[in-house]
Length: 131
Length: 292
Image (tube, rainbow over all chains, first blue to last red; front, side, top):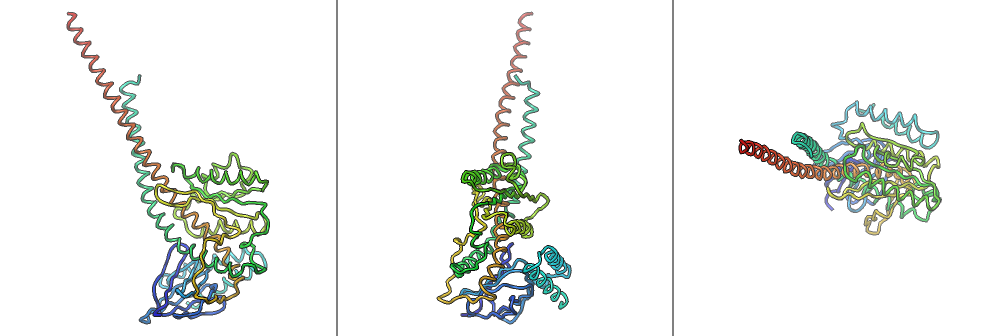
C-alpha cells in the first residue's frame, strides 16, 4: 500500500483529505506516529500539534483540540473539534483557547470533570510556552 | 365601487410588497447557498462520529459499565423534547411543521402518562409552543444575535442538555429539526439523542482485525458521547438553517407570483374603470350637444 490515506475533519468542514507518508498525532497517552499499514486503533486526543508528512518529506503542522483518531485499513481519520494550521494560529487564538479552558475549569464540578478540565488547561499552557 | 384613485393606490402598494418579497427571495437564495454548503460540509464529521460510536457500541454491548448516555438510565419516564426552529418567520410552513411534529410527539407521550419537558431552541418554536405547552417548557435559548451558526453555539446547547441529564432531570432526549432534502422539500425530523441512536453507523471493514483502543473503549466512549450530542445538535442546527432559507425562498417566490397576479387583476380593473369613465363623459358631452 502506497501512502496513508489521511482525513482531518472538523465539525464545520473536511479540512484535509489525501494520501500522505506519515502522521504524528498527540494521543491522550502519548505521541503516536502513524505510517501506512498501521493496525486498527482508536484513541482520544489531547490538545497539541498534528504533524503531517507528505510523500516528498514536506511537513505540515496543525493545531488540534478535543477529538479522536481512528485508524482502520482504509486509512486514518482524525476528528477534531478545533483544527487550525500552525501558520494561521496566532498567539491570541491560543490565548482564547486557554480562556475557554479556564472557564471550563471554573465551571467543572469537583471530581473527574475537574481533573480533565485542568489537564486540558495545563496542556494548552505547555503548548503556549513551547511556541 | 372603488374609485380610480383607490385602485391606483392599491396597485402601488401591491407593487411595493412585490418588491419586498422579491428582495427577500433573492436574499434567501444567497443565504441558502451558504447554509447549504455549511450543512454539507458538516456531514462528514457527524457521519464518521456515528460510525466510530457504532463500532465502539457494538464492542461494548453486553458488557457492564457502559456509559448511561449510550444505554440510557434504564427508565422511560421523563422525556426531553429539544425543539429547534428559526428565529424569524415568513418562511412558509417551516416553523409550524417542526412545532407540529413536536406537538404530536408530546401529545402521544402525555397520553401514555409520561412526563414531558420541552427545551426550545429558536424564538419561533417557543412562540408556537408557549400557548398550549407553556408549562412544559423548561429551557429556552435563541440565537437572534448569531449570524453564522458555529460549533460553539451547538456546544452551549449540548452543555445545558448534558447538565440536565447528569442532574437526572430526564431519561430520554429527542431533537426536533427540519432535515434539508432540497430547496422545495424539507422534512421535519425527530432524532433521539439520549440514549444514543447507534443503528445508523455501519461498522468499518477491518478485515477480521480488532480495534486496539487507547485508552480503553469505555473511556473513549465516555469522552466521545458528550461530544456526539454536540455534533448531532450542530448538524440539526445547520440543517435547520439551510431548510429555513429554502422554505423562505419558496414562500417568497410564491408571494412574489401572487403579488404579480394581483397587480394584473387590479390593472385590468383599473383600465376598465377608466374606459367606463371616459365613455360616460363622452356620452354626457354628446347628449349635451344633441340637446341644443
